[in-house]
Length: 490
Length: 145
Image (cartoon, rainbow over all chains, first blue to last red; front, side):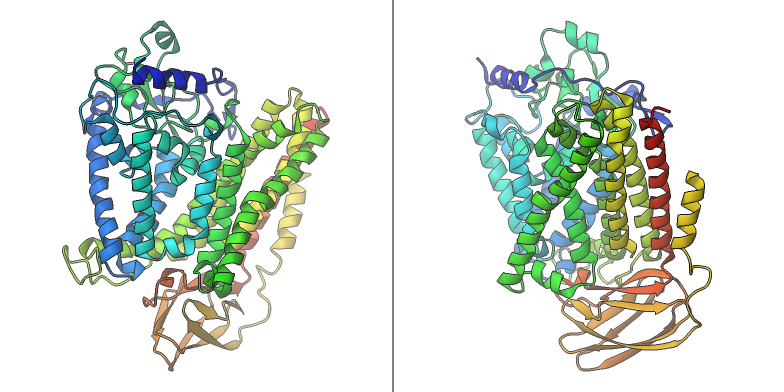
């Protein structure tokens, strides 16, 4: 069995059952049908671009060059964070771009141009751009079955979050983190098949995967009958023009964005030209009642809680909290890290569990409590993402002017490459920050309510049971939104 | 009924918006800046107050930039800088260090609350009103209507 066929067998086994599509009659916010789609690949130029191997190679390589500069700056540049490209590009530009634009409107499009795993992928394929036929390099092991979920990703993210006060302010720490991810990913690419690292280990990939379900962009087959009739399954096994899905997905049966890295490999491998890129309503995949699990629920709790903790630590007025996060004393940091982990792993799940239990009781205990707990956790995704949007406004607007300075002097060595190094620090539109943050939260709240009601009807067969079950969820979402409002503008 | 409840809640929560508490008064507040915090971290005044901030520091040079007002200054170690302004814009505004002072500099932030905090109150009113409407709709649906 070739390595490609072997991997495809794993992919086939992983996809336990065909996903049920989003209910066709659902309408988001009473306005946008869940089935509404706009196929972007009808534009011939875009279609040609996505089918070209250079479309992945060029942005990835540009980003790899940037990350090399960032790694160098982390080691050799100034230790002053806001004068070093490592901090300014990663935690001001990249993070804000991710939350404000790339995830909501582009799903996991970042993964398609991420430079961190690319060395490993090139080594594994033994090729840079062209499709190289034959078995890949390395061992192509299968990832352990017990780890084929988000639990490991959750753990890695929490580990990074505990040191966030250092990592986001010290260039050397940012470089160490990125360097460690690059080394680990390269090693795992040589040991495990395809993009196992991206799917099951990358700390960024976890929340990108969950929040991608809210995104307004998707890659899907244009016609299911074409896929069913096409026995070669080139998108899974690969063809002369393209590799089998690097993400171990079955593009023919793709119903959620969680593990679609938008590498567009299926556009190249499919000889039927049956893959499309579609615009769609926000939140569509949150209604797909398939492949849900507590690992993703906990990812939703972790991301929602992290948005609150980071807002309090970085945008709050509490110096003691900053000192703790900043590792001024080991005891203080232990309190910060312990509190963070306790809140994200236990506190929020307990709170959600209580409201899920109330919903379960009110609805007459007609379905397993676990199903109620897991299903309702997905309505935290819109609110969580929009809380991150609010947080990102607070990072970008006051600190965005550092980006122009850094372009001229990335290492903080006194260069002035483009004449912008002496620009004064200039906060932009910070007078509008409270309004932007409040509006972001309100949009997230309304969308979460809408998704909660749809999830309730999906979970409970009887409409009246669903209506009773959603009552506690409305209270929970209102409480969470009011708390975030206080954090942002209170 | 929902609209009426929401209106009542809204009126209750925004009481004071149209009539700020008290007239304008002069406030003198001493703020100590240090790596990487202001003390006090939260300053509360009322709309129309004439505010004098006395900014002091004992470690390194720090800055002070007040969102929404665009006021900025800096203070050298062991010196005091005074800042005068009228709290004309209600709401919660961040003040932040404007002179690079160390690794946590971008997050050296304090809050100025100019009461009444209309953004917060209207935000909470909106959350309350939307929640009540949603609860009412779900309640009626649950009763089979």
